[in-house]
Image 1: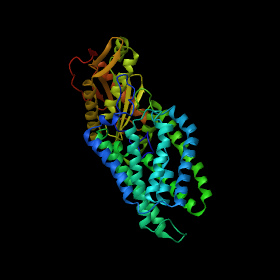
Image 2: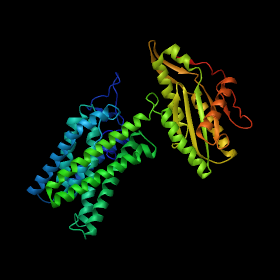
Image 3: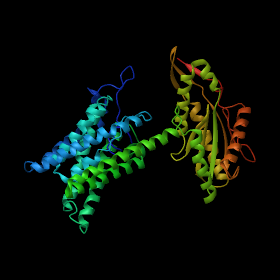
Image 4: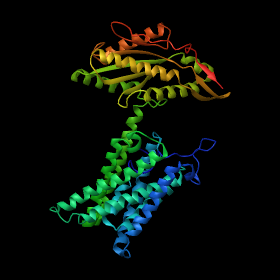
Length: 457
């Protein structure tokens, strides 16, 4: 997950209302656009954060704790300002406006301070982020407030766990203290993850595990940040000046995020969001070699959008880009999550299906998937903006050629050649067909006169 907050504290999947001009609306009133279940969930979490923190207050905060909290808040401000340059570079290549690793300071506050002061640090950290990052980006205020509430609850849970374990480690032999910190990390992650996933689910913005919980590497980055927070807390307890040493590793983590996103941009086709040809071939070749090594089946499809030139000639290249993106989304949605889908160039796409049954079973599975993708595209309606207004493009179709590993080739290059030959056989036979390489072609029925692209106003 990406966007506001670190990987686990992100609520960017909550719906953001757009105005008539397509620009994200301001925070004012945007909470009312949430579905009722999501709205109730947001309010309950925010009220719970205030109530739980208030219930922990038994005495006035001590001055040393207040000074420590202020110091952590200042460190977070310094961290945010130092990371601005790195994030400015990252924003040039990423849709998300900021990747926040501030949990290093909020988690340190959770370990060192009573819940009230830890919550105050969280509020100070996120108030600064709001001023410097999110308000200029027109992020709705309710999302930022909800993020702050989830972090407050996560910090309170982490503090409770550490307190039950007897506090921070007092020395090398304090195993209970070490275990307490590990448990606090898990508690922080669990509370934050559940609350964010619940908000996304209630808003209807995601249904898969990846939608709800984010990618594995993003969550691993958040855990690494929390570990840095634990080390910062231990340093503050032993020698407060040493906590400044946490800043360089955090900035390195920011650069690691930048490098990863640059790698993703380099491997992604800008128009469709699929793997580009080079990245697809690299990953597909690796998968084919693995299939050969373990004796499993795999298959390759080459899919060509029929009469795509007509779309560009009639409606323009921008409309053609919209069609390519819509077809790419259908192809991605029509295969398994771990199947490799890429854009081969122009109007050609490629799909690799790994982990198929060996032998004839792979060919049957390939044909079934190819037919499913062909049908999905034939049923596709793509609304596009043209000089003549909104137009819906229908009647799209694809021709598909497929080949199997190892029946049609031992290497990716050999299988691609067999699939390409099958694709041309489908084209010669009239388009909107599936042809699979092998001893006998498997035909597919024609679906009416879908060769011509139709439009509807």
